[in-house]
Length: 354
Image 1 (cartoon, rainbow, N blue to C red):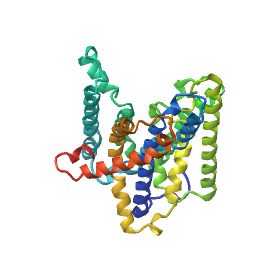
Image 2 (cartoon, rainbow, N blue to C red):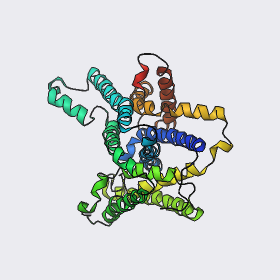
Image 3 (tube, rainbow, N blue to C red):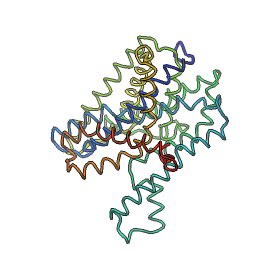
């Protein structure tokens, strides 16, 4: 347990949560505009896209850390039945609705062949999110919600050390050893991974909760984390760059969110935002605007793939053009925010954006 651990005050907490939320969803949009990072080509466009991939990769971990920071202590506000009801309304129902909308969009666009369509095919499409690849996030977050009633019990002061245990052992067995050995051309026996953590994503909500409830990280540890995070970013870029050129294909050794090259930068971003006392220079009016924009983040996630498709159709921009890689992400984000906030004001249909 890190020295000085206790609950933080709510005002600053709300501000930096909202700012992290906005920053993370914008980075999601940025990553998807730079999708050519996943298709190797010996060009400056690919190298630039790889840079964006490395710098913005923290987005998903930050979302999961915010999930833990806001939900791990749900028992202080309501019971578990209410928790699941709220999560059902906020996540599961929008997930099903938007999967259906994307399914209809592709169906009407003629993207599916008639002979493909059948009950088993429809089941597979929905079960494995094949109508929108970015929806892989939903099954994972739903699984984390299912684990939350157990994890929330460990927020009691006498059990808190076991959360640090899960993070420490999980980091070593899920995040550190597998990629390090892979970089050396060695295999890691997955049986050594802590089974309580499953795929490893659960480490992020636990980290988010623990970091959000530490009053202040000692300066020396803060500096160590920041320097290490920068080192992780440089390592991931250089390793992927040279390994990809060596095999003329994208080397995906360091492309997992649960690896140390993702975990440590995400922790660094989180603690930097937490360390800044936004309330000193952000007025109440600006705070409300930030909160409003933050409230659109989930809707931006649901909508941005459709908006990107329409932008590309209307502008005919190539995936490797600088406009598409660096400028259009801002347009996509702004358009999505306006649409989401507008629809949220319309009765009967505002429920599609929780």
